[in-house]
Image 1 (cartoon, rainbow, N blue to C red):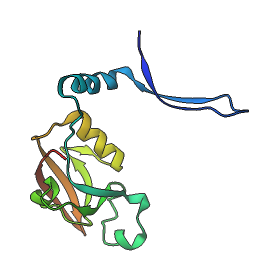
Image 2: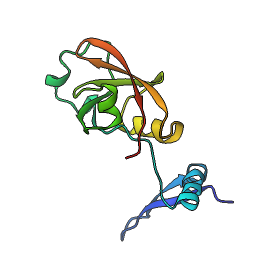
Image 3: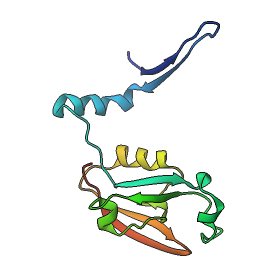
Image 4: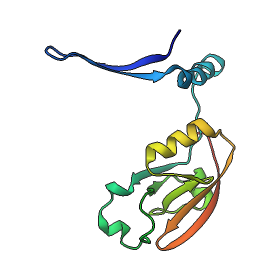
Length: 141
């Protein structure tokens, strides 16, 4: 019975060794898509992101005190879902479809596990002190 697939192993002289594995349930949809399509295609927003804790105070000085977590849009690809849906550089994404977003990794995990290309998502952002919700249609990369 497979419960995980190794994704990384660190082994050096004098070190017992350290391994990381991906749960097999996470791998099944990926393997299935590889078999059916020959590649993995995931939903794409077309943004570069930075977590709030990574940002200098200068960038978050106009954000309301209540916004403690989220990710800032640092750049937007022209013609992408983000550009077409109205996201702007320096918007802070705090939720997608009601799911709180704390880090860029959490955003990717949500998109890759819960959404597919062509889905509409409602993205709650702060643009300065103003809260906005924009609707994006997820695209191919």
